[in-house]
Image (cartoon, rainbow, N blue to C red; front, side, top):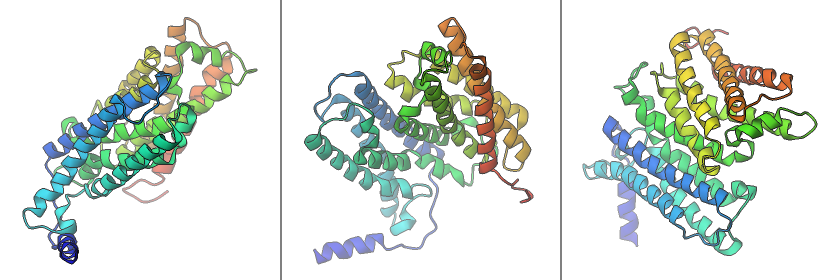
Length: 355
């Protein structure tokens, strides 16, 4: 035991070399394995939402989910181990951006074991309680750290300037987009993307029922979940065209899985909103040094996204909501919330530091 502890201590002792960045290809593999991981979770979410009874932890969808974890985790560990084989030790062996993901790997495994024990002794959750299970919350937190590894790797990569190409930024976009789907999953009770077109129109056709309240609240929550990652990226990079379209296309996969894609027109409306947002970015050129454009994009992005949401729902349902204040005012509220979010994320322009 003493020899083992001494060996571990020597391995963890930092050898002092400057940490290195991995290649763009390595980040892309990390992102693609993260897609496997994320798709596995979506399949599991579909099962919990659409199958009547789940009585065991050992299911085909859990197999896809945990095999994805094994694949991406093994790849991340290998990036550090290959540096150990070159003589690096401690932090010097861990590539830039990969430390948090590496630390999260054993954490996820521990929460996975806890989840198995939870289901074995307490059963399988079938309702909103699944979103508050401590083991599930631990899994989602560590999973977020793992799949956003390409984003952290790209953040200060020396070959990635302020205006990256779409291909070079792709791993970071995929990682952040799938992380946003994890947030939307655990806020499913307030996810406007899960509403059907008929449900949207029905909810905004009366103020006497609680449907309008629920939909309006869900729109605000989903607005923040969709927009915050885009604004976060715009503080760092001038996003290439197609970035928001990709993120929104990934973003609809989780609610689509949960609803078995029965509300496809509504989901496709968000993909169209991603295209509109990319056009807004090309027009306004928002960035950390263009605060006015950043704020303008934040407000217009939210307004156009939720205007499209209501328009698509109305067309798909064959009628418009009967309460004009809700139909016209809800996108304005979303736009104002987007503006506030933009102000909070970029209170001062990066070039002047003045208010």
